[in-house]
Image (cartoon, rainbow, N blue to C red):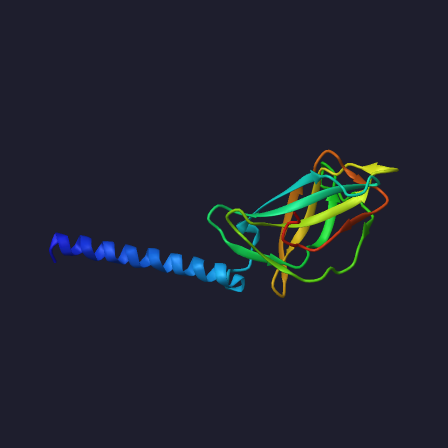
Amino acid sequence: MSRFRTIATAAALAGTAALAGVAASAAQASDPTAAPWCTGDDLAIRVDDMRSPSAKDKAHVIRFVAAEGVSCRIGGTVSNLRFLDWKGNDIHAALNGGQPPYSETLIGGDSYAAKYVASNSEGPQQFPAFVRFNLPGQGKLGALVTVAWPASGIGAEYVRSGGIVAPVG
């Protein structure tokens, strides 16, 4: 085989692979269920303070951001939510809430998913160093993750959290 033919064949194969990647991305954009389910390795998770709509509450958002080059979907709610001190011990925060409505969100690029957390800002406060939970899995428990919690803390009387949703606003 001539050198030209070898180079031309390699270029054609590379072009076909690139087109397949573009087609797969386009399919995921038009049909979010075509995207794979997010795993712990697919995500960069962080917690941020946010402005609460009520002066009596603190508000936080847990952001589920796809790792570089990843597009995946996530939905439902987390399991086994616990707030931990610096040593990793459960501080036994008073968790309230029920099962939120189920929804799925496609994340990747500039899109992320969010879980909102509210607690009372009046009265006793707790100051966890971390939050730990299992990610939602499809029919099974997802990866156990531990994420740093902001210094603003949480109210000791209750902590409410919803499901994983597309961000508000």
